[in-house]
Each structure stands twice: as structure tokens, then as C-alpha cells.
Amino acid sequence: MPSRTTSGSSSSKGKLRRRAAVASRPAFPEDLDTDADENNSSFGPVHLDEPRAYTFKPNERVWIRNHDKWIAGRIFPSSVPKIRSSDNLVYWDVKYSDSYGHKLRRCFAPLLGDLKPDNARVRRLLREAHWIYPTPYSSGKMAC
Image (cartoon, rainbow, N blue to C red; front, side):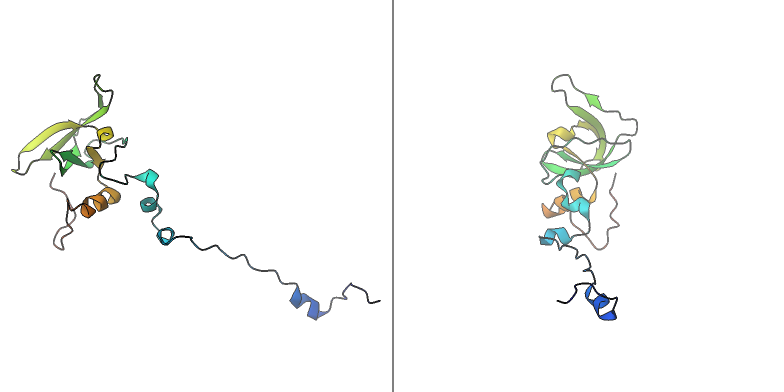
């Protein structure tokens, strides 16, 4: 009966190769996107009306909903969050310009869905809802 041991021949070395690990493919086309922040709903709103808790810094660019219109603004420079005793929500002072060019200041609450940070996800939602339009001549800067 032949022995099952090999004597170190070169033919047996070629057969003992290990398979390389194969990386799994994404299951859905959305997973192919390299920007994980855009695909992860924990990093930003899914809808414009979605209330979310945000922490802002003074002079940070934001989007506010005022009279059912979305307007660009900035957190007031000496702003600290305020909590109203009537509803226990955090409000932020925002300065913005109306359609006539008047500089205004008003408090908005992110948990009411009226105040959003100016980031790529929110701008994309505003473009999809036709509140802002990409133009070839704009530099992407806001008026405030």
C-alpha cells in the first residue's frame, strides 16, 4: 500500500497554494458611493422638515426656514444657545437678509426643523426641493 507522505517533490508544492481572500462586493449600488457621510443617515437629515439637534458655533453658516422659505444666514457672532421655558427647546440667534436686503436677527430652533447647518447634504436637499439652484457663475458663497 502506498504511503501518504510526500518526499518533498516539487509537484506537491504547487498543489498546496492557498486561496487569496476575496473581498465581498457591495450588495446595493448605493454602497458603491465612496462618500460614507452621504449614505449614512446619522450624519444629516433625510428630509428638509426633519428636526435634528445640532450644535453651532458663532459665525457658522446655516439655512433657516422663515415663512416657508429657506434662506441663508449665519449664527450671530456673540450667540449662545437659549432655552425657552415654554417648550424647553434650544434656540439660536441667526442673522440673515430678507428679499429687500434688510439685515434681520431672529431665534430659530433646530428641533423645530427651522434651522439646518450649511453642509453638502443640506444643500443637496435644498437643490432637490428647488430652493437653491446651481449656476455656472456663482462661487458657492452665500450673501450673509
